[in-house]
Amino acid sequence: MPLESMGEEKSDPPLIMMPERSRAESFARFRPKVIWGAAVFCFISVVAALSSVRVLDVRGASMTPGIGEGDNVLVLTRLASLSRGSVIVHRSPGGDPPMVLRRIIALPGDVVEIRKGRVLINDADIEEPYVSAQQNQRQHDMAPIRIPDRTYFVMADNRDGAYDSRDWGVVSDQQIYGKVLRWH
Image (cartoon, rainbow, N blue to C red; front, side, top):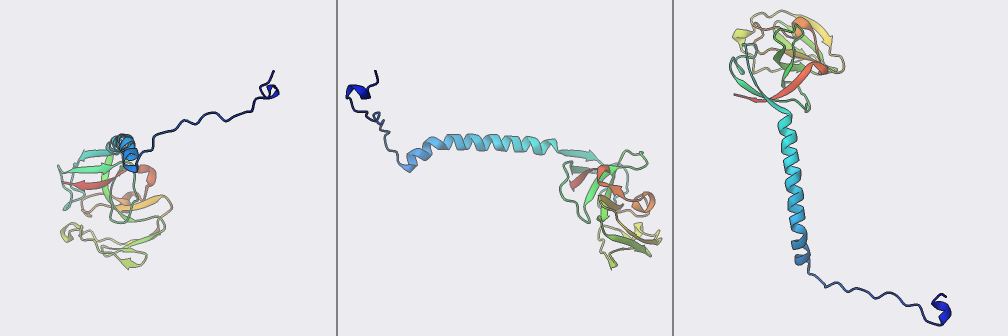
């Protein structure tokens, strides 16, 4: 028989009273969890970053005077944004050597042209402090070309001593291995 029918009143269950804590006490209990969570996040971030960074040894003089034979380059293989002037490592169109260092000169949508050894992007002469005059004697012209989507026009800093987009065309984003972060 239900309790109501016996004439007893229904009552609320008793409340359990929790001791009041100050904010400082509450934070003190929460702090180890925050520190532990931050430590785990930092560990995962460092592991992810290290798995996408490689150190490569430079062979050859295609990027002299800035990057030379025997230098080491730190390469980010998870590509960040690429811009004009970025030095990249990409798969060689000829296959030998398998990877080469080159500098991005023109981006997708740009129009690149070479007149008497000077590079023009969208009809504007660009400054190239990384190119030595002694290594840019070839000075042949190149008619204007528009760079297709998802491709880049790249050149060696040693213009006379290396092959680049002037010889084998643009480099697709699929051929790019990584972006050079620094060298020494």
